[in-house]
Image 1 (tube, rainbow, N blue to C red):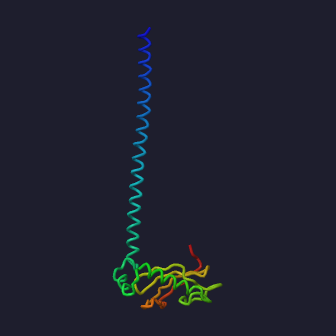
Image 2: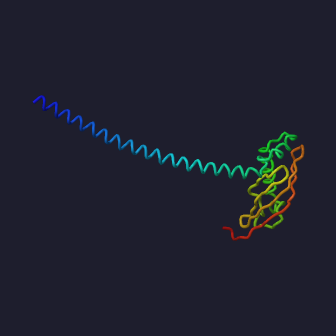
Image 3: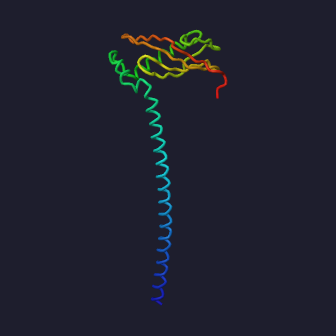
Length: 167
């Protein structure tokens, strides 16, 4: 009787061990599949990141931050490219609140006039910006000068006003 009991306990323990092994193996297989999927996803994300970084590098090529000569131009005024961009943006926003809209935009806009929304500082002399009156929009190329007192003067070089059929 004792021998049968030990035999049954051994068989029962063996079955339990087999069940643990099979379940553990399934779990390990699932984890390995998940790792493979995550590696594929990580590779895709890495490719996307490289693409975006390349696009940013191209976009930054034609900016004041991507142009050491343009950045060095402002060293004599103790200004960094970020400070120059902030100064220009502030001055352009100040012009937006004038009656009739921003005077650098030669179009008559609805309601309060045209206002500059976004700017891209191309180098130490030029700015590309877009403008809108809430209904129409366009782009403007501006020339700017900053003197030693950090006073800014702007000159409109060219503008483009788009049709209302945006989309």
